Image (tube, rainbow, N blue to C red; front, side, top):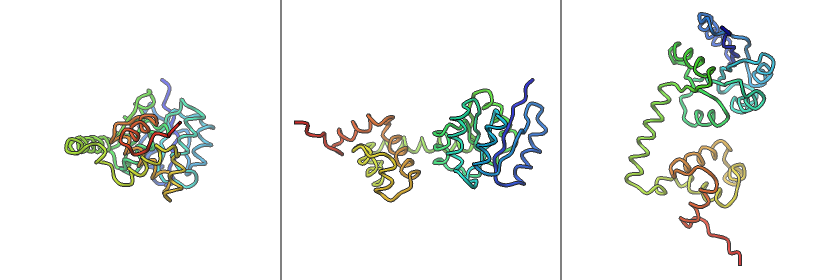
Length: 221
């Protein structure tokens, strides 16, 4: 039986050694390469052609998210599993947006990591139970809040500002520049407002803004 080929990308040598020791006990998994930063991860993903990249968040060099995007673009059959200490929903969302198939916390029990690798190598996806629980709790909270308030009333002032600017045709980068925010922050605001309003694309966002009279329909006469 062919083994699952793993590229381990993490800037902590001792952590990489620990993961290697852990996975060495699994007969169907092998580490084929290591990387200590985003540049090395991208190069070695092309060199070793792994089935799964275990990707840390916060390594030196190019961001782990951009590295993941490029790995998935260059070699779609290679899956990426974020293995991180950050139990952060924004990081989780960004990871999924750039093409990762899973998100596992570093303090998870070893069997969870092994299960995640196997699921992802077969084309599935995997979330640490703690992250999944956070998402469920957040969803329940939002349902309760939207029962009490109109959807628009649940938006923060910044989310309303971002909504208006996006509906007026500004890109995320343009909004970030005008509000003096990072692109990542604006992306997070965009995700949150679209989630709260149950909007799934730019056209729906514009329609909503017109309906709520947040922006005006241009006078074409």
